[in-house]
Image (cartoon, rainbow, N blue to C red; front, side):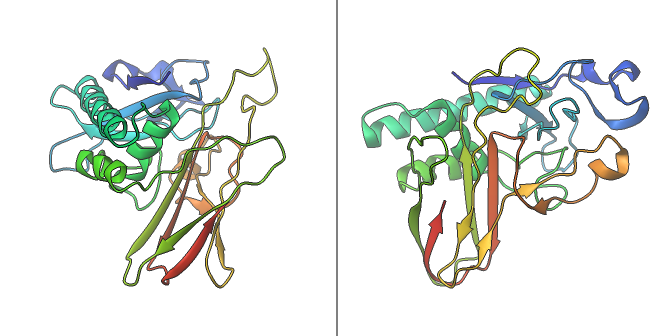
Length: 248
């Protein structure tokens, strides 16, 4: 089951500050880790890139919020917009496949169809982007989804065709992770790794943010490398050559 949570204005108090530094990136809760499978949302003003609700999950170091959306009354309205879009995704999926999608599938569609806003690439202000309801539903209708299960220490791959004159290839992997044992050194139980390979054997790793607890680190652009923290992994390729690409 997926849970949507809006980042409320009440988080913006000094006692939520990261390591005592007064800055824009705040925790949602003091001294607590944000659950991996909570879908955390931020608010974006209409026609602007002013993100009114921001956080940095400095205990789990994960990308939060994962998505932003327009909310007339803040993040509560943004959560309602995303919830409505999730319902449309589920309806479109059931019309096409006869069953409802897994919660991880719905989340993957929301993230993969989002528009990049603010700082180029993923960041701690807008997460993986701004909600795009039309693109989300179109993703389902065009069948650009792959659902599967995988065993430990196994590799699974799927091939996709990239047509000529494609401006951007975007691949998102999402999974629901079981709870770790109490006081485990690492909260992530199943560490899946996403790689995209081109016809000429070039490969791209996911975008990963620097989570070190300082303002300078949190504002650094994302880098391509193995992600060992998040249950969402995103790969983008600008102006990909046409051909058969392998997703592993």
